[in-house]
Length: 111
Length: 113
Figure 1 (cartoon, rainbow over the protein chains, first blue to last red):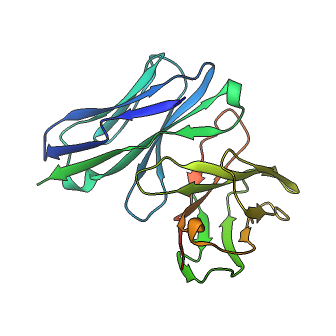
Figure 2 (cartoon, each protein chain N blue to C red):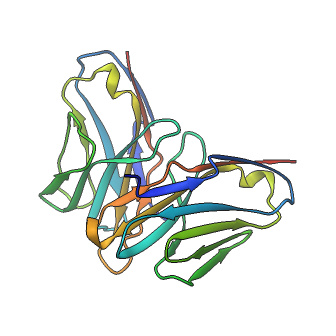
Figure 3 (tube, chains in turn brown, red):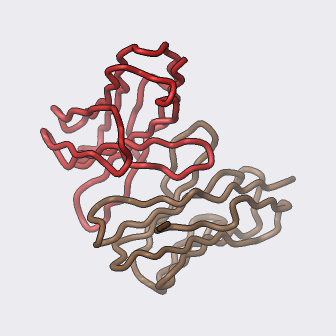
């Protein structure tokens, strides 16, 4: 059973067209939900950690939110340099310290 | 800013060769991890360590081995490389505490012919 599901798999946006990426999870006892950005051929770059429902974090054009079953990564007025794959991972008490990753959303921002 | 390094970045090698992928971090983190990532797929944990002389296997069955003799160093070894080992290998580390945020290295792209 998939513990982390990300949607959509791919997203194409015009520059300036805001949108949201979704990460839903099925684990119980969430210890943390993590968002990463990954550029082709590189390792994931840490963006945010969220711990409890209702929590929000922002960084430049990105804002991450968390509910009891899902997280959203909102991208406001994206630029071409925001093009990347965005990965979500969860860490749950039932699985100890292990992270479970989704397959990511590939974002392309067209000038 | 995470300081975690992996070498080599790219490696093309023949079947049956022994290889070691290097990973080092300068943050003093206790925990270190090795993941395997194929295109379009999620990261799969293959090995992890919670400190010196501590290593465990992850969810993904792997023919590799690891060692943790020093806090900063966590090499991964394949005794006999096969084409099925062709993949991206990512090393990560995290500190012990309330936040287990993992920081990743740049990865090693391994191709076995």
